[in-house]
Length: 89
Image (tube, rainbow, N blue to C red; front, top):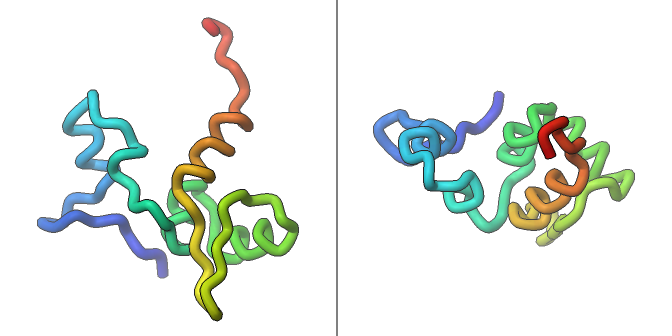
């Protein structure tokens, strides 16, 4: 079961970002993401996130005892670097 990024009244953080086109996704994410939140962001599974962490493929991994968190800013920067340029760019 995946956790949803909700802000109250059943509206997800992603939905709230679409309400205001000037608000970027970076301002709606928490500073540290859980594995479930990172999986939702990357549209993969928890198992996939843990596999990428084990292979050292994801940036910004923080381990606090048994808890694993990921820095949202590092993850979003990594995604920007990985994206292919569109034909208009």
